[in-house]
Image 1: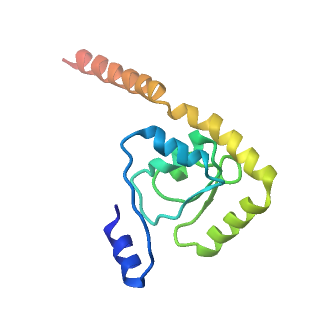
Image 2: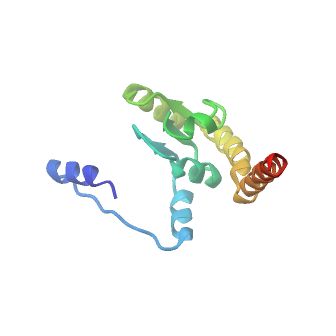
Image 3: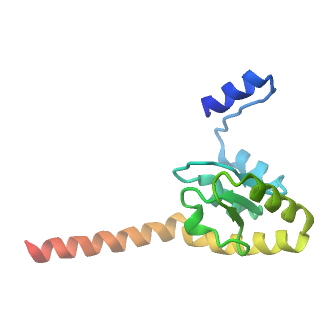
Length: 141
């Protein structure tokens, strides 16, 4: 959906297809087919794909954007490089491609770590926060 990417591909004459999925299971099926997932963004609000790849058990290579810096422990539950570090991305992809043990370890650790971002757990944290705020407001009124 990134217009500038599509425009760039059109300008270079590179064929592409862009799909929208109505059913989340369709996206999950695509993750299951992946050997690794690459997030090469320069800016992100999320990216949601970091959590999706981790939850799917797909080894992840990402730039340090959005929440990736807070979630990814480089070499433990994913591989992370600085934004615009093209060589770093290539090295990380090559390392994953050539190291089955690393892929397995990253995948297993990511699958465990991502569970703390489950909506049920996040909701409980917010409920606790709102309860404290309500208590403070009631005490000061």
